[in-house]
Image (cartoon, rainbow, N blue to C red; front, side, top):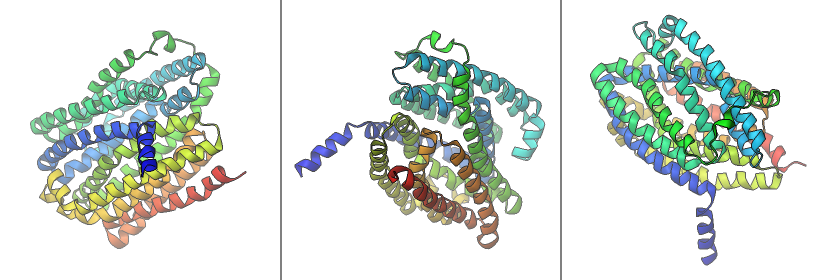
Length: 429
């Protein structure tokens, strides 16, 4: 018993536990603010409004990813990998920042010029095109916020990232309540832009107060070597845009056209709940696992780190999913409204898919940490297209229920593939 307690104490002092603990605090606050903001949006806008919010949020995510050039993951990886090598870190910082600013200008121009097209194709109407103009003008703040978060992550300043997330949740809540009540769906969509725009200044403040911060770190010339290394992640990031964000947008659009905007809102609702309760796990993977796996060179140590993740994060995921399933009726009534009652039937396969998702991601992060570009691109494309294909097929048999069955089955196959592949990498000669 004493030995077990000592191990528990030792584990509680580790980076994985500390990161998860701080992320847990941020998640509790995010869930609290999400409870209120979701209720306001659901009551005032209904399932159709939730669906449009999901569409615009996906568009913002895609545009921001394109604008960053997909460098952020690479910045985190190489800052962690080059720990103690200041000159190499300066080259990564300068190359990443300058290239990000250049690509941001290009994407902002495309969004501004194509506001009419994006309004009709993404939101099914042109009456919200002014929002695309606003987003184009503020896009630089989105990309700089993401870039500096990745820098903080690379330097392992987890607490600062958590503070940013907490403040972001509170600011987002205030903006959502005010704008939704005052301006309806237009206000809700504008809130998605303003929340990140305002929080970017908070992120800049935390970066400026860091011990490592120096303007000279960002003023070196763009080096071909750094650009080449970061560019590996461009292809990987753009693949993720297609396989995750675009496919999700395409699935929602498919539901709108083949079922209804109402049912697209029900599907978005259950996806939103998954995002909220899984955020403690996914942020831990991004903020702890990526830099940690990047700096490990020894196969045995790498294997131990993977097993540590499974021992801690997977049970947390299973227990969280079980609690959400048992409380699904209460959650729907609290977070949404009576219009979302049918959403309860989507929970089982969505939550099962969440467990498969986290189990596979614990291995999938090795692709990012070790720059396994070809494998990453191939698997993301295959399973992204495969997911949409399964949705197309399963919706014919089970309607809206088919979307969550497709999600669960797709991640089950994803997990099986990675177990087979990484078994050779971690245990092979």
